[in-house]
Length: 125
Image (cartoon, rainbow, N blue to C red; front, side, top):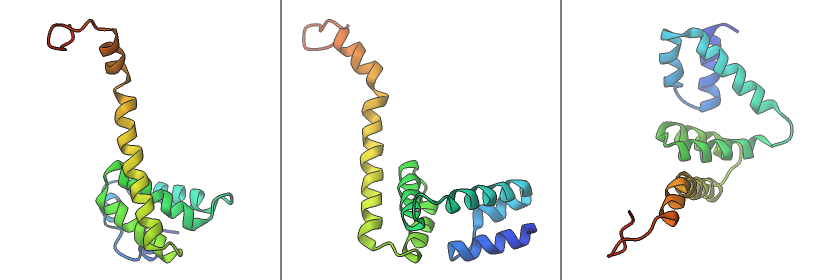
């Protein structure tokens, strides 16, 4: 497929304008082709049904903070049979995982705090 055909296929899959890909096509056309190849590869792997892959997309996009991608993937998930409740659970999972990473990020700080001697008033040295 040529670039225009790939963009058209993306529009059909997304149910709307693949705006970021259109912009990319003007700057690095091969990037669009690579994105399409990656999508095709992931979406045709057999172990996870496409509906669940779309819910995973929603979760990842929401956790990464992309409003655009979260909405687009939620629309795709609905076209693949996901319910509003399933999509909202995916969003809540994203919120939980995102919040949990704060604790993992703070491990060195928490270790430092536990190993510090408190000063008067509860402050650490």
